[in-house]
Length: 287
Image 1 (cartoon, rainbow, N blue to C red):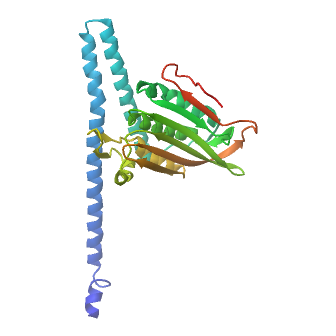
Image 2: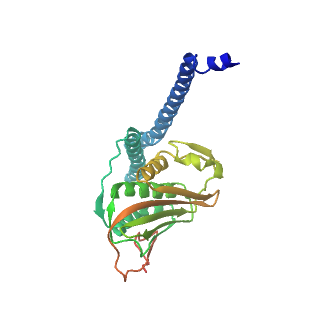
Image 3: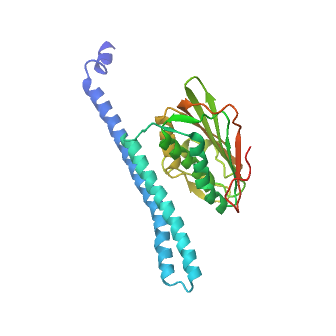
């Protein structure tokens, strides 16, 4: 009995080597499959808008009227923006995977940053006639010091995800803050009335090019790279992201990130609520 035990422990190092090699082989095969799936999905995602650009370009050449040509040109612009968004996502994803993510801390005014991001996404919301509103709590400091650019990327990805998967209803973009002595915890939330996510699929939405089950309309949607990058960025900034979703009713994505306080907001400042309209693309309500 003792000899048997020694055979599988002290006196048989070959068994340990074999086990290590088996684990290494399994890990390498898993990484290879993941890479293959990634490249396959990436090729598919790029091919779709690229084919649209080529197809509508050919249509312009034979368009019977200027109006028809302009409509085709508009479709080319949309497809080009989709392609650019995808390529930028791949670049950011590659930087994160290689550990080359640039972190640049600067002074910035959060109200200006979040307001500009809301205005930037408003035309997309208007295309689907969605009700879009922005809420900024009076607790949000006047000036912060931190990684402004990565916060912009996180918010942009969340807002892009919201209008992509919301066909009707509303999107609410809200920012709250929990202030301490010299730091604040920004609580950034994007709530939509879109497709929603099944509970068993929530973990998968943060995986690159993960494809979920068919939705209620029979459409299979892919999460692309946006949420995968968002998760990585939040982790890099030592924050956290939560998802609360009801399938068929909508989702709420909430991000919490700490930033340094440079200047608190004026004591007289109030909560700000801005609603953007379909026709004017301008705020119609401020409090």
